[in-house]
View 1 (cartoon, protein in one colour):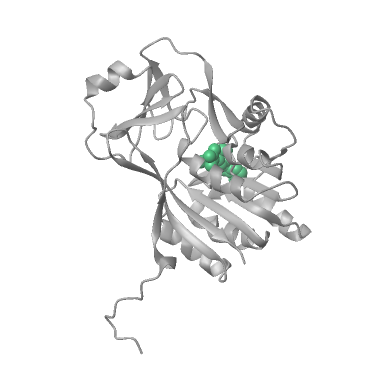
View 2 (cartoon, helix red, strand yellow):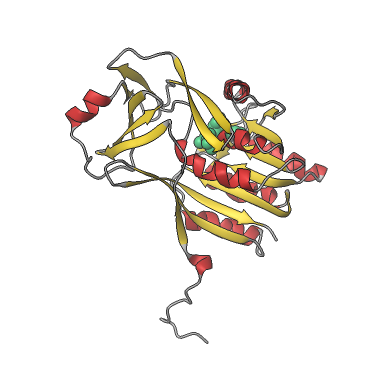
Length: 300
Ligand SMILES: C[S@@+](CC[C@H](N)C(=O)[O-])C[C@H]1O[C@@H](n2cnc3c(N)ncnc32)[C@H](O)[C@@H]1O
């Protein structure tokens, strides 16, 4: 019997990891703090709200204003508008080198939700995904947004299925695919949970499953997605469509801790190798900005 206050055995299985993206030339977090982030997307430097950045900024506010081409000004809990400080284009393009001879291209624009069409920290996953795929392997990207992970997977020649609830977002990804000189991604405008449960019934399995569920969302037929109510159901079903030897990358920006994500996956796939931690960005002034919680799961 262990003593009541005995420390738990240390194990690498229980270590939390911090993942940072490498390889970006077209993105840079210049500074963060005072509830905001200052970052460069290609030639444009933008200021966006960042509730996690509660520390002091590294540069002065006037330095931020001097560098920034535009700032997102929130007008509600999720929406707002962009205030340009210089002349800015309606859309522009950035690239991420996924290999020595292939770039992923992203068309960016100023949305009403503070985003511009790419989550740059996800590049840490794109590389991991690409390293594990090859022609003939099957990848499923759920809650897939503008498709960074889908493009990374497709760049290896793997079969890729991209699922998102919003048709315009899927159209945006198709543009990114074409700009990247690729073709052949399978598009599904569908509720992610509904899609997984259908695949489970059909007996379809995937070698790589990527998902990034938000705190809340709506499927195209009004299906309500609420993370704390549906996450268990999603993970239990998703675990059954991971092929033997397959992998899962699950991220969330919802504020759920990495340990909570890990608990769900340990219950769903007890024999799997699981790494849990935070997806982070280095800022040019020395801070580490945690962006989301992440687990990587590898099925034996
Ligand atoms: C945080 S974004 C994912 C970002 C993505 N990991 C990336 O790197 O580009 C969440 C996405 O989930 C989609 N979504 C929300 N509710 C959904 C649902 N019920 N079924 C499918 N997709 C949904 C949204 O349209 C949005 O594109």
